[in-house]
Amino acid sequence: MDQELRNAKQNVREFLQKAYTDERLAMLLAHAQSGQLSYSSCCCVIGVTTATHALRGRYDDYQQPHYFEARNRFGANGGSFVDFGGSDERRRRVLIPMIRAEMRRRDRLRKVQTDVGQGPVQASPEETLCR
Image (cartoon, rainbow, N blue to C red; front, side, top):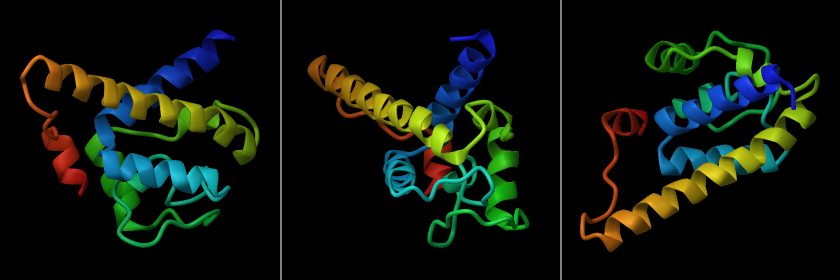
């Protein structure tokens, strides 16, 4: 794997961790698995975090307020997602396993914290804002 792809994947992993609630992460996975997740949409990896409408597939209108809200809140840009490859299909093939890995990471973290008596993981302020 070349360094550019490695960096892009790390940026997206960090974005999934800081910008997505569990519920929104599940929405992103379903959206990607349906084949609708597109780089050219207000409901891309960035926009899903704050979408106020049903998730859309390819939709070349970035003037949706929720898209700009997500970019501003999380300091995101679409550069890392576009670096995954030339097509949305390829991007989804790379992203879906990353989403699943983030879900597993959160499950393990919850289990560890419950096992040591800390109780379940509480939502961070960023996660609460996304709901």
